[in-house]
Length: 210
Image (spheres, rainbow, N blue to C red):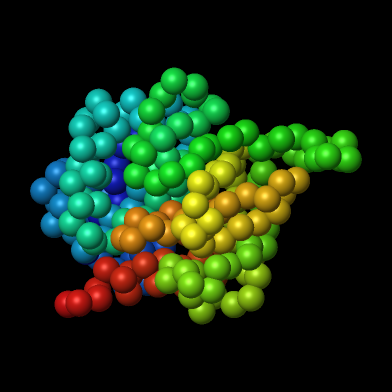
């Protein structure tokens, strides 16, 4: 079973629907015992970094996440769920994120070095360059297209942990993997067959060793 963490941050039902479509038992929950007993956990989310961290801490879900990650079982962040795994964001200075991965969340610039204008937030489909070592993104084809909705992006400290990048005005780290913790800035649940394959890869990880 996969738990989808419920902290009132939206983008939850579509993730559940995609997992059910793939035949996976999935539950939306913030119950500690349910989450810790799960084979995999997904932290989705859209909205503000600061508001989301406030909700996670108010219900002690941040501590549940730390405990779950310590089990070594697969954990996946999606969109805002990726950003929350890092220690800070330009969106809400002074708010501390989960700090499970090393890097910084910064604003997408609206112009490039030549003065060309880019719409922010970035909304729509972009191709991604995949790290061939990625487990989450394996077998999804060469430079596939996935769906984005975001105004802030990750600058990872460690290139070895970057699973994929894209270019939208600037180079953007759009997927990361470190041990059992992985995340995507894009929405696999909204990325058609490519996204379903990514979620299927995650499901397969939750069943390894059984």
